Image (tube, rainbow, N blue to C red; front, side):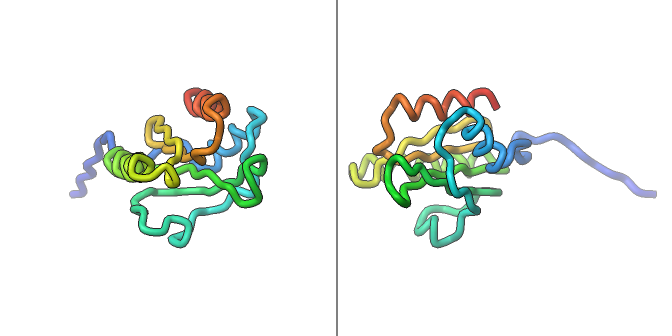
Amino acid sequence: MLFVISGCSSDSGSSVSAGDVITKFKEAGLEAEDARALTSEDMGIAPMAFEEGQRFVLPSLGEDVGARVFVFKKTSDLDDLKKYYDEMGKASAMFFSHTYAKDKVLLQLPGKLEEEQVNKYKEVMDKL
C-alpha cells in the first residue's frame, strides 16, 4: 500500500520567475538590459538563500550599474536578504539601495535611481 501526503505551505516557491519580472519591466518601457543569472561573485558576502536571481543593467545610470530580482521559496529568506540590504544602506549612504518585496519576489535597485523611477518598477511588480 502506498500513501501520498501532500499539503500547501506558505513557503512554496513563487509562480513567477526572475525572467518574467524582467520581461514585464521591459514591456512597461523600463530599463532592464543584459539580464543574466546571479553568481556568487555578484552577491559578495550577502546571503544566497534565493531560489533564482537575475541581474540587469540600467544604462542611463552608468555602463555597469545594475539591479537585481530575486525569487524565493521561503518568505523568511526574502525577509533576511531585504533586511541585509536595508541595514547596509543605513550603515553607509554608499551602500544604499532601494528594495521592494512582493509575494516571494525581491527587487533591489541602485540607490541613485530617482524615486519616481523606483515607483514605476514597483508598479510593475504590484501587477504580477
